[in-house]
Length: 286
Ligand SMILES: C[C@@](CO)(OP(=O)(O)O)[C@H](O)COP(=O)(O)OP(=O)(O)OC[C@H]1O[C@@H](n2ccc(N)nc2=O)[C@H](O)[C@@H]1O
Ligand SMILES: Nc1ncnc2c1ncn2[C@@H]1O[C@H](COP(=O)(O)OP(=O)(O)O)[C@@H](O)[C@H]1O
Image (cartoon, rainbow, N blue to C red; front, side, top):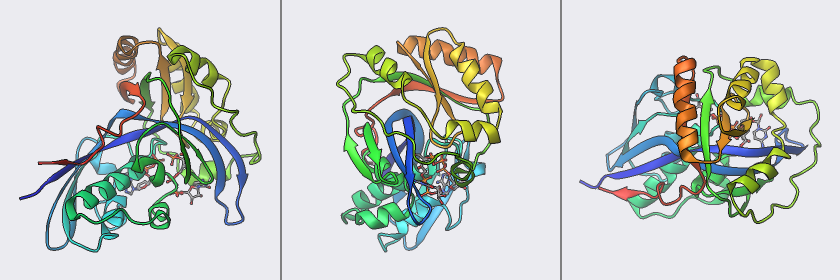
C-alpha cells in the first residue's frame, strides 16, 4: 500500500517586528524566519475515513481529535487518510509545531491524492504561520505572516531551548504595549554566518518583552543560552517560550546543547543548523 512520510520542521523567527494591527485584531508583522532540521514526522496512508494517531515524546500535549491542525489540513482534500503524527516539538511554544504539522499534512495529502494544494486563503485559515511552513525555506514574512519573500541566508548553527511553560500566542499579542514598531531594514547579502548574526543582533523580537512578563523563566533561558561557550546571539522565537542561541559552528552548538541538557534536565532542547529544510520536508513515497 502507498505510504507517504513527511517531515515538519520547527520554524524559528530570527527577528520578529510587530509593525501594526488590522481592524480584525490580527497584528502586522515583519519577520525573518528559517527552519530547523529538528521537527515532527507525519505518515499518511489511504483509508476510508480520516483518522489521526498521535505518538512521540511530545504527543501527550496535543489533541488527537478534529481540533488537531493535521486533521483540519487533511480534511481540505475531501478524501480519507490514516495519519500518524510523531510529535517531537513542544506544543504552543513559538516554533510553529502545529502550523508546520498542518503544512506537512497539506504536502503529504497532495502527494497521496495527486490533488493540488488548497488555495492560499484556505491555507491561511489554518493559521497565520501555515503559509510560511508550506515551503520551509528562509523567508521574510510580512502581512499577518502570509506575504512571503524568499531570502538567501547562510546556515546558522543553533540550539533551541524550551523551559516547558506554555505561553498562549493571543495573550502575548494582547500584552504588547506598542504595535507600531519599525519594520526590518533591507536584508543585505550576508558574507557568512558571522555577518548574518551581527545583523540579527541589531534586530528584535517585539513579543519577547510581553512573553517574559508572563513567563519570567524565559529571561533565565536567554541568560543561560547567552552564557554558553560560543553563543553569539540569544533570542526568543515567535510568541515563545522557545528561545534560540546562534553559534559559529555546529560542533559548538552541539557541545553547548549537551552542557545545557546536563545543567537543566527539565528543559527541552535540541540543536541543528537553521536554514533551508525544503528538501528534507518533501514528501517521501515508501
Ligand atoms: C507569533 C507567530 C510568529 O510567527 O508565531 P508562533 O508564536 O505561533 O510560533 C505567529 O504570528 C502566530 O501564528 P499562528 O500560531 O499560526 O497564529 P494563528 O493560529 O493564526 O492565531 C493565533 C492568535 O494569535 C494572534 N495573532 C496571530 C498572528 C498575527 N499576525 N497576529 C495576531 O494577533 C491572534 O490573537 C490569533 O487569534
Ligand atoms: N498538530 C499540532 N501540534 C501542536 N499543537 C497543535 C496541533 N494541532 C493543534 N494544536 C494546538 O495549537 C496550539 C498552538 O500550537 P503550536 O502551533 O505548536 O504553537 P506555536 O506556533 O506557538 O508553537 C496548541 O495549543 C495546541 O493545542
